[in-house]
Length: 418
Image 1 (cartoon, rainbow, N blue to C red):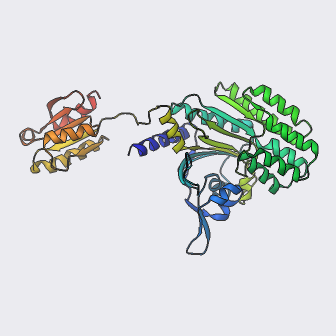
Image 2 (tube, rainbow, N blue to C red):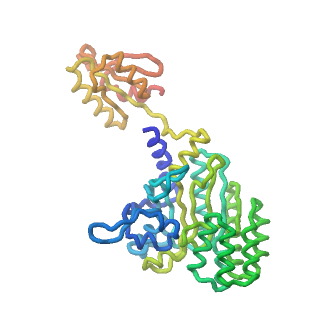
Image 3 (cartoon, rainbow, N blue to C red):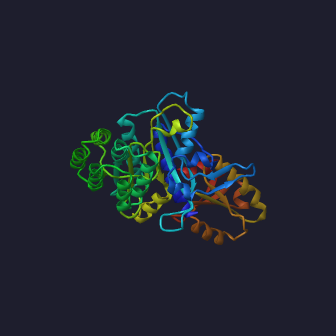
């Protein structure tokens, strides 16, 4: 229950944030067509999907991430909706990983997608939303790693490297196998200039955003598409900075994420206490078209609920829902059981959490149990008091009790200090 409470607390904050940013909630299927999920997801995820044939002979899989399902939803059901469309979802995802630190076969994510805008302000909104979530959760010292897949892809595309080969190179970069990635670049038949350029791109990184972007422009100056990607990234980061949002940024010109559908800005947020990112996102302008929709630009982010909970534990940030009154009703004797049930319904009707003592304990034993359950008030139902339509109300924190009228019971509890 404590772990579930922490998970639900983070989920509640992500849902409240979606409401504040005007993202509408949707629910996507846990089981999807394998082909739909495999399209543009990346080789690493394709290998780790829980895939099987259903009783109808269809190849299906458990969802490994949300974006493909969201893109299908837009392409098949929402193409005529006014743009931009802002969607949110939260739920469980599945990948066959060897169980290890921060890698689970079932894990939870909150997901935000902004569909229908190719402007830098859409990318900036997703970055700001993620910053806002980390701040609202009470996390500290978080930082963002940010890049743009258009920088590397721009160089490779201008050199005539096929998309499939590009995907292979990006996968190697995502897995931090830089030497193998550069070897794959050389094997793809690019010029020596391109090889040298890409090597310099991978070395262009740092926390001084202005300096890194200036260096990136110089490095890719011979590649117009890559240069445009750097300028796009600068526009996005300038917007964030001018919006008075402050978080530490590590810009990596050669940053790549494993999902093949990314086309623009990509990022991952981190907290110092965890070795892995607590989320990730980016721009994907061609995915909805792949599923039969019209060409539609989009950008999104997924936050790892499990990892956010762990980060909060490491930083000793409370994951408890705001303290509220919690009542236990204790009947004295079997003849008071029905009245206890009646009173519990009366209090629940005014949205007060109530449990009834159902094991037949003595009053003293029941009060001890109430302490263990973090009960704030107990209501003791006895025959003598009930004759006058009264009960005994006990404040568990201050250890004081008094007799109150049943008709005033809910008001007396609500007005009492917790």
